[in-house]
Length: 136
Image: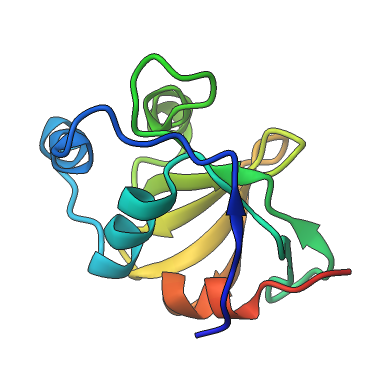
């Protein structure tokens, strides 16, 4: 795995934050996602550019926070997506209000565009997504 350096990490206020979110929303996230969140909650990686199956040079801003009172939380993001795409669980954001999500149906990582409500496939797993991040 390529080593990422994370900045602005917000430690989880509760060791069960991720499990509480999963229980509340009746979802099960893969271990690579939950491990990353527990270590880097709300953090921003030093490598942040990624490609999708149809576009290049997309930018990840930060992981969403699993602390309910932080600024950009997974709770706010999932509320947006519940009306649009119930099968997506937001994991990270870009600078423009789009989300990098785990797709519960296909079990892969997709990029959700808020203006069009379409998704672009990013990778088969979160680990593959993180390994594919690069500096422009």
